[in-house]
Length: 324
Image (cartoon, rainbow, N blue to C red; front, side, top):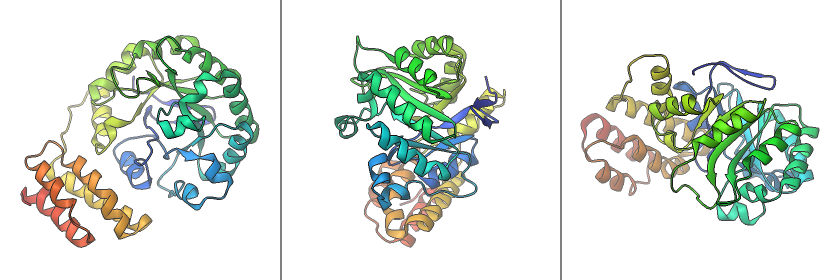
């Protein structure tokens, strides 16, 4: 189940990937995921309208480093020619282009992008064709099952993706209407795997190493994308690799949680400055503290701290001493 993954000309030594997640998968998070075993990481999804209009904030989402490779760049939009133009602009920044056709968020769907595209197969074909024409990098799409129950057209969309030159398809087997409720239908991943000749990557409800092993076994998919399960939990990559290799699992120690927090904070300061680092790190260190005694009080405490030194002092005190 643990094996190399080939996506077009990109040869990956493993098949456990970090999914693109808005507001989460910035450079520090990707570096941590790689440290613990992710073989391919994705940027947050990037608006093609922002890129084409030279929006600095959109290009900031492409911030990377030599250690952050190979890097997948996920773009979203709904106009084929703009998608193609944006893909050409971002190609020098990464090693793979992914088109988001699965985001269920109202703001994205309302613009005609994300999972709204599942209702327009002809536009899906036009978008992939336009992007494929402009870039030679490996090209993938990330989709959902369909718009709503009774409209599960993921096979049709995946067939189009393959025919138009995509090198892999990632399926999160929920409809847009489901958002993140209920259970993902892994049998749909298995169906897609038996249908396509290009790699199929599975996503959805992967919160433990056992979940990953089960998806790989039950669906036969070529690789998996860890998303919500990896939020604040880079150890999920390590434990997944250990489980699939027949080794025992290793729960993170308090010291390891602290070291990850410190590394994450330093990286954030380096890329975004102290004020942004403190604000954004509140959610991350809260996740790193999950399951520990006093975590709720710790979360309330750090939400009141603005100064970086005081913030990290409180983090160190909690993880080393269990005190507030």
